[in-house]
Image (cartoon, rainbow, N blue to C red; front, side, top):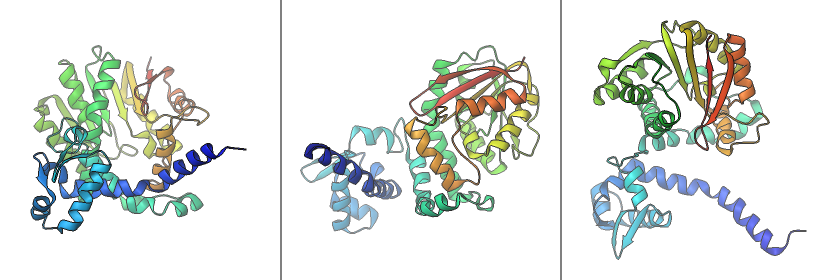
Length: 331
């Protein structure tokens, strides 16, 4: 039988999980309001409330909550960003995450129906594709997270042998930008939906990389991917699709790739027995909520697709606690 101390630990643990939405909603509210941009310089709650046109009572309680979360500092009556908020939540921060946080806010309504999704096994219908602000938050959110992931890939992989990269489902172009900046002889072709490519072009222009990057618009499951690539990079795409769709997609990739070329898949790959990593197991539920057939996949499942497509062998690399790589070549 567990002793009283163990029982206290367990009750604290489960109640921390059940109360997690409160901190999430507090963060969503603060990011939407631009609190962390306002507090790049210290201000009291009255000044913040006046800037927002909100009640001083409500703003004071919110700011104190953010102090409790470790996101703000309080010096007598004045509030300012904690270092973590300067870096990740103020728009000028070196690792700004506001767009991906807004995207997560957009998931709130769908996650509230998790019981129905689990009961039926059905997620978001294909007719409910993102558009407008929702799409922009999602794509720019991918840029928020990719700025660090791209550097992790570059520190792990030598891309110097390659001259023409297909960035398949390339989103905001973060990897095309980072890889072509790191390797002057590498050019990239980014493939994505037309509305996504427009956002990618903005990002590539801001990075002064448009002359190094070409664009193809289309649906990767149904449209031609182009040819002549010696390197295909697929980041965080396969989890959006079913097993059958991924197998078909990798057959198309094989035919688009030149002999000797490399396919690099980066995703939230799970252990073969689905025992972890924890983030990837939770993300599988995110795919249940948001897609018709998406999931997080194991090394064995991905290798079955690459083997069937014609690739040989395979190498796995743990890039971060959440993200792993699968690397194969076309002989």
